[in-house]
Amino acid sequence: MIRALLLAIGQLSDPASRRVVWIGVLSAILAFALLAGAVWWALFHTALTGYAWVDGVLDVLGGLAVLLLAWVLFPATVGMVSSFFLDEVVQAVERRHYPQLPPPRQTGLGEELLTALRFFAIVLLVNLFALPLYLMVPGLNLLIFYTANGYLLGREYFEMVAIRRMGRKEAGFLRRSSPLKPFLAGTVIAFLSTIPFVNLLVPVIASAFMVHVYHSMTGAMPGSMPVSMTGLSRREGP
Image 1 (cartoon, rainbow, N blue to C red):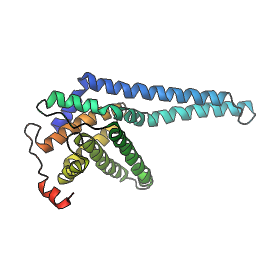
Image 2: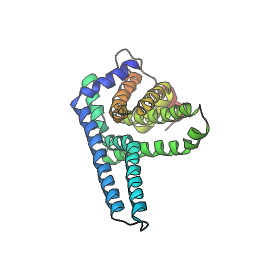
Image 3: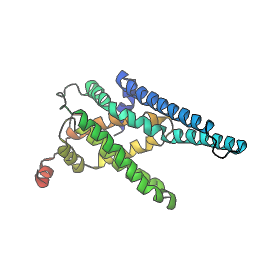
Image 4: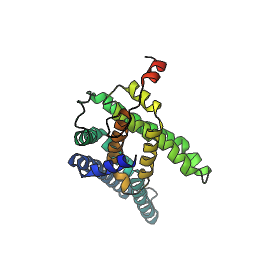
């Protein structure tokens, strides 16, 4: 697991990985700059109360609210934009570390879009439902956060990588047959997501990290043992 993470961090030197990082960051900056400009224009050209000093205070508070919103949502926006380009990162990792592999199966634009939207919808919904627990159970909030997000991030990043090499059902079989590795990898990703500035690199690092985790489970990673899905597939059926 540590070796896989170090290899993933080293992947940041690859031009394809750096390109995805810059696309995500610059797109998020542009989006929030446009949002901030629109909000500031609306505030300064709208008399909300008719009292100059009150409107001035509201203008300042509105501008600060936009800045706070940008600070909180910026990493998520970077991740959302980057998710549409993560296949380039996965290809770069396999080209660099697994050149012996055959070409992956082709996934359509619709499947890639569905995977990205499904990923963010699940993470958003679970964190919204867990929000009261974060606030009401001091001391357990970190445990709840890392457990929930570790499971979700591990599952979604793993299946994003795995479906390039097998069907979605087979990817689910493989993950459930050896759930600890994807969960631990997801927990590491969740932890990195809480570190300012590092979280901007998380989509790229997480994708590269999970490529190595996946191939360690199939036996393609040197020194790894493949996970057998025969028994599980037989029990699950078609």
